[in-house]
Amino acid sequence: MVGQTTSITRDLIASRQGVCVTITKQHVSGVILPLVTPFSDGKVDEKSLTQLVARYRATGITGVVLAGTTGESPVLSGSEVQLVVEHVAGELDGALPVYLGVSGNDTRSVAADIASYDKLSVDGYLVAAPYYNRPSQAGLSAHFDAVARQTDRAVIVYNIPYRTGVNLENSTLLALAERHSNVVGVKDSSGDIKQSMELIREGSERLAVMTGEDHLFFACVALGGAGGILASAHVLPERFVKVYRDLADGRREDALSAWNQLSPWIPLLFNEPNPVPLKAWLAEQGIISSAECRLPLAPATPGLLAAVRERLPRDPAH
Ligand SMILES: O=C(O)C1=N[C@H](C(=O)O)C[C@H](O)C1
Image 1: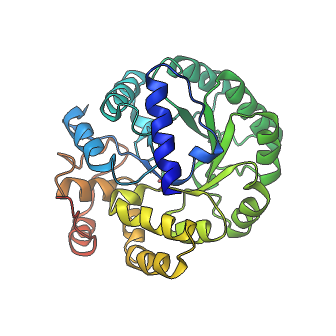
Image 2: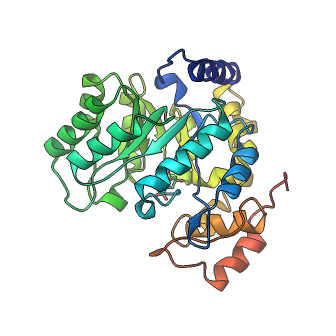
């Protein structure tokens, strides 16, 4: 797995030099980091973005997601998304794949957004099921058909019913992956362990099954899943990567002991809406300049701030 990561990195560097490389299922594995979008006085804070990339690029993570939930996608304008992508892709200079979160509940707009983001340095998309209008499985199929047809780049489908109000069933997802070779992965936050286990069992041959439930990371990889897209991996990223590599290389006991040092504090990061606790921690460590989130995410409560200070580990790199 470690060797594979290195060769992927080389492929991507080649791609930035003009040789086009397609992200496949194999690229989507390990620990992918959904980066926060730092703000300062209401604006995207580019200096903090630079610091984020400097901190995380060589930790062993296998990619970054920009403008995901953790990146506060609902409150970013199109031009801010472009700024974040260009800034991060420029800093990374091909060292890691860049995935962009693009979601919405109007299929035509999502397809149009993807058409315009295809001009940017984006290697793939993380696309959540439409929220609020609660389409049927047929509607979800047609939505993702339109997305997958719109681009040659990789698509990771994001199933998160507790945010969107609709569950993408495994059969719908697997049929979609059969129809589109660029549907290479799923970020599974179904919230239903039976559904997740079935997906890993039945779907892993065709799709990279990445968990989006941070507390299930060990279980997902131990069961044969491909890895995780984890906001909590901002904290001790190297240790999350170690859990993955130990499991992938058959060192289960080592993986478990590393995991047992991570799992007790992960829930704290979700005690208030993500990324509020995470940004409080990042600002406390000096990795970003301010914990600022945009409304409707309210600032961290004093109780949360105290817990973040007392219970989360310090960043060893700062
Ligand atoms: O932005 C993401 O990607 C993630 N979002 C989840 C959420 O907040 O719903 C959490 C997960 O760790 C990554």
